[in-house]
Structure formats: C-alpha cells, structure tokens
Picture 1: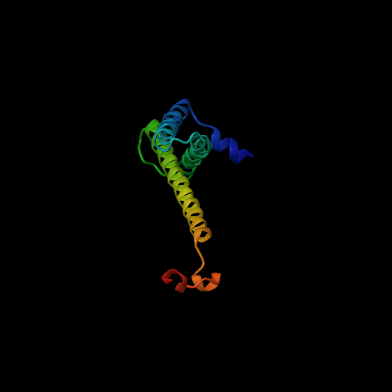
Picture 2: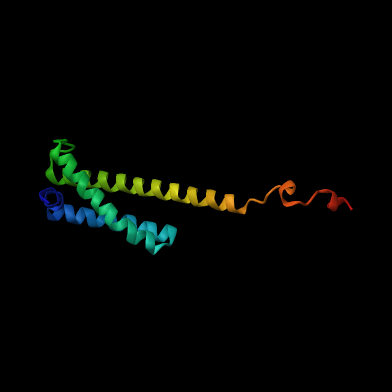
Length: 123
C-alpha cells in the first residue's frame, strides 16, 4: 500500500501536466474516432501510465533535466505516450481478431461440400 501512495503523491505541476496531456489526448481521440467510450476507458489508463512512469524514472535516478518541474513533465509525457501506444496496440489486436472471426464466419463452403455441382449453372 505504501508503493501506491508513493506513486500517486505528486505536486501541483504534475497534476496540471497530467490534466493537460490526458485531456488533449482524450479530446483528440474523441474527435477523431467519435467514440466517447474509448475516451472514458483510456483516461484512467493514461493517468496511471503517467504516474507509474514518473515514479519509475524518479526511483531509478534517471535525470532528463536539471530543472525538477521539467523532469516531472518529461517523465509524465513519456508515461502518457507509452500507455497510449500500448492501448492502441491492444485495440489493433482486438480489431484484427474481430476481423479474422468475421472473415471465418462469412466464408462459404466449396460446392463439393454443399452437394451442389457447377453443372447446374451450365444447363
């Protein structure tokens, strides 16, 4: 439980950066895709990605910038972008799986399996 509180303990700058990044991505997604459902489902995952990325970069001592606020903003941006790429990858796999299922269900059996022959078309 201590790890959870360590991850979500951020300053005001981090909250503003998270709100700006996630808000802009969700707005763009909603306007391009037209799906409010995707926007609602993506929001907590994007926020979690930002917070976990900030924690991991800080805990491992990776310094991107000497300015603390710039460091936090960069870490949050990396987390949001990585979680967005992960979500888009998952959606792409789900769409391909659904398309594959549709293609399999729409296939028609060959004439030899249905008992009909091609000779009836010639007559």
